[in-house]
Length: 115
Length: 110
Image (cartoon, rainbow over all chains, first blue to last red; front, side, top):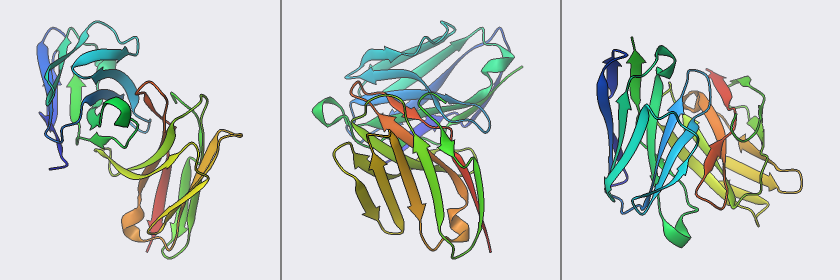
């Protein structure tokens, strides 16, 4: 199984809502990532988890809150978002530890619209 | 982009022709990777070249890496309509960061 599964595929939320994006992989990967991608732009790194610990936070606003409950799951909790946060949110995973410098496997993304 | 530039930004070629795109990056790397993205969905890994390698082949793909110039190129030979996509380079630094270049949009005309 070389899949990274993201749910939901589409999400529309109001600026006062709280929602969560979910990501799951069963490849035994110990590094997991959240990226944000605006139209016609490259993915921008948001967070990296390594062995279920947050190792990189690219100065992301606190209205985005990541969580890694176990080695297979990654969540992104959303609260009080702004319309400019509308984007494609991509989850990815790769092998961890000394073999962490390998390719990343990406999910299909969640298309988020903030109204 | 987070890491560097790619050129050209867009490329339109006839089926059967070769497509070449270039990428520059800013920091020291462990490896350089290339990804394809169709219609704004998930990215698919194409090929990885390590910092101590200069050239790598995989099927119709050829990647070069020049660490002295902090640049890489991707060549797709004998292009097909199915190669129409956006292509991104991504540099892997020594702290799990995988940072993407600006990307090249390739259109292959039948």
